[in-house]
Image (tube, rainbow, N blue to C red; front, side, top):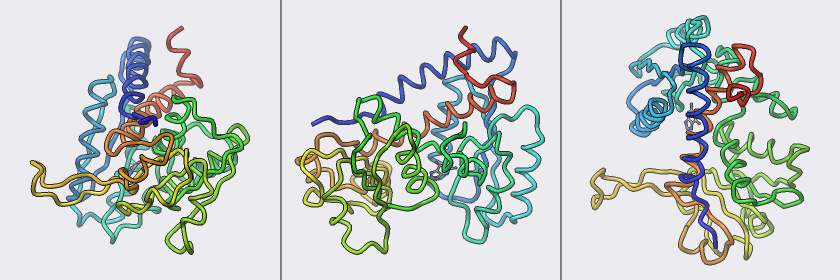
Length: 299
Ligand code: GUN
């Protein structure tokens, strides 16, 4: 059984991104710059943003934080995004999701300049991904495929069951796996699927991104399958200093006895997502300066 350490692989990727950032700064006399918009007081949103900004600092990316009260209007948010689109110093724009319920997320995302859309969430970048191309690919799906690659886990001709149909994970990871260079057979389950185990038990790889702690248990999966757990839910736990523990969508203890490889929570997919955000920021910064392959910076 292999524990798929996203933490370890992400560290390797981040070290390389740091090299790219150093070369970028030498060439252009400025660091790649990521603008982050955070709305309201969602504790996990704030934690994610802090993690992303700390890593920016370590790697050599300038990060700017724009915070808004949860009462912010739709127009104030779209105006901010538009001004960041125009700001020549800003290479990447990230709007931390979810937004408060009164804000229309897709309307805010729609105004992000696709060239600065480091989350790959705009209709243009999602569309390109579906068509089999595109430079800026959503971070969690991209991170999952990089993690599988790093452990030499093939997806070609494998049956993959994706649980969850979100725009952030489920849909784009299914689209990536389906592409001609990946060639997986993809099943997508969601909250209206009748008997999810009918699909999971046939799958060579199960990717769970449902936000339901413990949804997938060992008896639902095939012997020797690979399990990727994208879930990360805060569960109140008075024995922890923070007051909570993090729970994945997979019941680790039962799944680990049956699978051939599994991601831990935390330390699995999460660090890969953040590493891909850093990489995408450098990709966007390079593309804005006419460099289509960041590796060119090292020549
Ligand atoms: N909320 C949960 N995951 C993500 C992500 O990958 N990007 C953004 N912007 N918000 C998120």
